[in-house]
Structure formats: C-alpha cells, structure tokens
Amino acid sequence: MPWLNKYTEIILVGIVSGVVFGFYQAIPTFPDPDSFYHARLTALMVQHGVLSEFPWLPFTTLGEVFTDHHLLYHILLMPFVGTLGPLVGVKVAQAIIAATFTIVCYGILKHWKIPYAGIAIIALYSVYPMLVRINLVKASALALLLFLVLLVTLPERRYLAAGIITLLYTMTHGGFLLAILVAVVVWCAQLITKSERKPTGLVLVCVATLVGIVANPYFPANLPFLWAQFFQIGVVNYQEVIEVGAEWYPFSLPDLIAVLSLLLLGLVVAGVLAVRRYQTMLADVRIISLTFLFVPLLLLTLRSRRFVEYLVPVLWLLVCVVVLPAWQRGDIQQLWRTHLKPLGRWATVLKVYLLLAILFGLLRSYSAVIGEFAAQEPLQRYAAAGTYLRDHVPADAVIFHGQWDDFPELFYHDPTHAYIVGLDPTFLYLADQAKYQQWVAISGGVDKLNTAAHIKDYFQSDYVVIDETEERTKLMLAYLLRDPTAVELFHQDAIRIFQL
Image 1 (cartoon, rainbow, N blue to C red):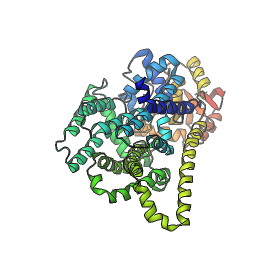
Image 2 (cartoon, rainbow, N blue to C red):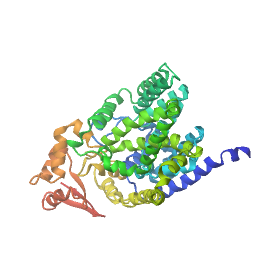
Image 3 (cartoon, one colour):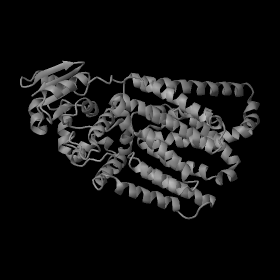
Image 4 (cartoon, rainbow, N blue to C red):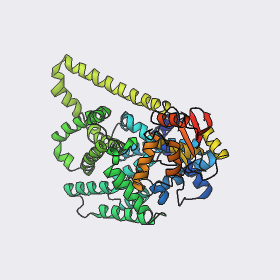
C-alpha cells in the first residue's frame, strides 16, 4: 500500500495526539464551564434543530436577540452528542478536533518542506495555555484550524479555498474578523516581496466575511450580537467596570514571557539568523506575513489572554520556518562554534541549561493540563439539584443564582427554567445596568435586610440556588438562612435550594 508509506508519519501524529487528547478528555471534569453550555445547546439542536431564541437568560441581551455564533461547531458536535450523549459526545468530539488541529499543524510544516516537523509539534505544546485552550470543549481548536489553513492558502494565492475557509470561519467562531487581519498582513507581505500587487485575497476575504454574515440563518439578528461580542466585549472590555470572563483579562508581560519562554528563545535565534540572511527573509512571503501577524496578536494578548491561542501557533510557525531549515543547513551550529564555544566551560553550562529547560518545560506543560482538569468540580455537581428543580419547580420559573459562571452547569442539568446571568456578565450589563447592579448587590451580600424580598421584586424569582462553597455568595446564604420567609428545600453536595 504505497499510500500508507506516504502518510505513515501523519497517521502516527494523528494517533499519538488522539491518544494524548483522549486521555485529557477522559478526566471527568470541564476546565471551562462554558463546555456545559455547548453540550446542552447541541443536545437541544439534536432534538429541535437550530434554535432561534434563548429564553434561558431573559434579562440579558441574549434573551432579547439570540445568535449562535458557534453554529457550525455545534452542528459538528451533533452526531457525537446524538450517538454518545451530551457529555461523552462533546469530549470525544473535542479530542478528535484537537488531534485534527495537530495534524494540520504538522501538515503545514510538511507542505512548506520544514524539517524536524515531529519535534516541532512537541515544542508547540510546550506552551501550557495553548495546550489547555485546544483541549477546552469550545470552538477554539476548530477556529484555529481554519485560521491556520487560511494563513497557508492566502500567500499561495489559492483564493477559492481561502474564500470557502473564511465563509466557514464566520459561522464557527466569534473571532472570524481575524481573517481580515490575516488577509491584510499577507497582502502587505506580497507587496514587499512583489509577488502580488492587487489586493485580490484581501477583497475576497472581506466579501466572504460579508457573505457569511448575511447568509447566516440568524441574519439580521446577528448584527447587534456581533457588535456586542466584537466591540463591547472584545474591544471596550468592561473588565474595570464589571466582572468579566477570565479569558478577557490581560496577560502581564512577565507572565507572558514566562509562558512563551521556549518560543521566545527560538525567536531570538530567528532574529539573529534574519540579520545574517535578511535578503532571503525579505523575499519570503511566509516569514513576512507571520512577522506582521505576530505583532498585533501580541498586543491583543496583552489586552486579553484569550488571544494567546492565536499568538502561539503564529509565533511557533515563524520560529519553525526560520530556525529549523537553518539548523538543517548547519547555520546555527556555525553560530555556536563562532560565538559561544570560545566561552569554554560556560558554553557547556549554557547547553546543559537549555536542554534541561526544554525538557522540564515540556513535562511541566503536559502535567499542568492534567492539573487544570483535575482541579475542577465534577461534571455531576449540579445533577441532583437540577433533577430536584425539574421535578418540583414550575416550568419556566426564574431561578436566582449568585455566580454568573454557574449558569452553564444549571442550564445543562436543568434546561426547563430561566436564569439571571450567564456566559458573560456583559450580556446582563448591556441589557440593563441597574438590574446588573441589583444582582451584584444581592448576590454579594451588600443587600443585607431585604434579600428575599428584593430577589422576588427585582427578578420575579421565588427560588434561589447557592453553592455554599463560594466565597462571594456566603453573605447572601447567611441572610437567607436567618430569613423566616426563605425555606430551604434542598441541600446536597454543597448545593442548596431555597423557596422565597
């Protein structure tokens, strides 16, 4: 079988990465609570088709106008959820998507004829946040896959493929505007190398983006959502006004340097090589495109840590394209002999240090992901409470909860009721700032005297769910326990339910 010999390496990469990611997904937790949202929403789509409204968060902008901006991701999950059930299905699907992303990364290096591709893949996953992000049951890994394929097709002027990828991107992930950034930097690189003067790729990506927005089944309702998601959450980012999702907070520069230390070391080497071979570098569209793309992604990551998932593969590709061919040619070894070997014993110490740093960096990254999974609450934390709510609380009643990131779990285990805030507090803040402040005051224990009455008056809710282990809601819990109008109905696994 000649084809087997031809694709042995890539099949091996797929199998190994599938086993590794399958091992991570076998840990019975979700590092990101949004995974519960994706599991339940997909299960609802299996039963009812594409959802046109979202009545589970009536006080938020999502309750007013809903757009599933991960539509194609959820469609991709549907056969897994329909066959294996929601929780197992999304985990199996994510392991496959993450393995496919790895195969694409490996395939790009082979397509570009970059040596040592297998070793390079190991280096890619030495960056702990990168390894975590692609293992999250979210659309991130699928979006990254499309992003990287676009980064390959545009410099090669395969515009039809680039247009199709962009179209898919717009319906897969909220970060699809990065496709336009890719098109801009590639066109600039083409101008510098004089390989293309017309902005054909840029125009095509812009048109495909517009078509994707208009062809979306949620159009025109998706327009206000995109405004909220891109500008108000992504650009304005109310992190100094309200509590937002962890991924929207910035990376500090020292932390980012520590996380990217191995790749930044490679970038330094790449910079030295670029100075020595600058004419060759300036003629390579790939190198210029990746360099131009690295800078804005670095700035975005310093603004919001979620962009690290884009920054890392771009930096990794840049280092691979410059450093690995230079190693194969012997350029790096020559630099070592010329500038470092004369240092004698210190050169040996430096070599040992670098080898140990690389080894321990890799081991730390892989073990840290296991720790990230293991540190989370079990998947069934709200299962018993959800069953109680479904069986004893009237359908469509509003359930008050004190933590916004508890919503995905509540939604998964009990989709028969409505809740206050979830997915991102900004959606409640944008819909009604006064109501958001009321929710913060009540759930944080600022409202000391009339907690139960205000929950009923402000949110039309007769039921409260509290996790007694949460520090933020402990005062609210104490007020309810001493309030004679609040009756405790349920208490199991640290979850308590009150009727007001």
